[in-house]
Image (cartoon, rainbow, N blue to C red):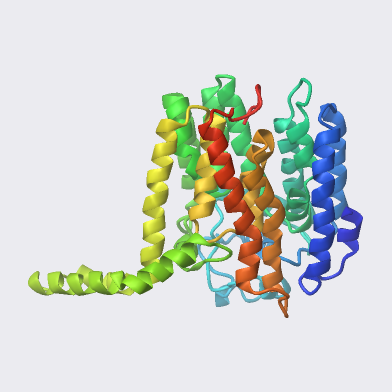
Length: 431
């Protein structure tokens, strides 16, 4: 199956065929999880490494992220901070014109944190970025090891993840860095489960500096790791951040990403529509103008006016809902793995953007807990690639319905089972 994906040319124009092969792999992964649930770790690691090695030579054609990784590494090796200059900056025009032309959104500076930038600089060589993809694939294989546990049926999650086509295609195939951040987060949880709070904090800090997604788990993990965990994470993040801030702040173009991007979400468009229907931003703007006139038009108020639009208010509303949800999870969910899973899931569902590879953050937890809703979503999310096709076979509404209608039903059924006292995870599971 992975050889078929390797040989399949231009998946963006042949998305239907790509998804057909992906679906076959999805079924095989479920069979493997059941039939190999008593396997030794070494066998599963060989399988996982072999599948991922198969796709390393495949060009990344469903996402442009790998080109940005390679560009950031190329810029850093030239002595320029990727945080200081966007690819479209004329000062970089002669650096690598061929690679520069393939970078998406060249007007925006990089959004990737310092540990990610270090990986790009060291491993980001070659036109196809095979060394960088190999790094991410190796991190993905490490997740298999972190999921495995001794005992009857203990290899279920590890086998499911080893054979699952989503991590294989998104790390070794498309070259996404999420597997590295997720592996570090799982390592942090593993250390925390054994009482290693300092090591857990260091691993968590490295995960945050790989991709900011793991910040969602911070309230839950700090409550369990307490001062040693928080201190280790803060020292590492502070030291690395300071060392990366020589030419420009490592925030880079993150604000543009946070304010502009949206893709494959169901909640965000609904909230935007609600803001439009209620005219809430317009009402707030009128009240603000009245306040400004009564207080003599303070100069700072001019900077506020660009934000009175529905999409911004929707993002603020979802951010406030997320903050409350994360605080509730940190207080109410006792198990660290369950709290991290719930926190990451809340972030993904309340985010304006949910690309298929974002699910690599929750897939290890869903596999360990045999959670049907997010397992289904991990198999269904690549359907969103149909919208990239030059002539989409399905409408956006149909694509969202395929992904989210069964997901919502499964999530509701899971909530009912949980309310009846179903255990969070198999005994001994590190996540």
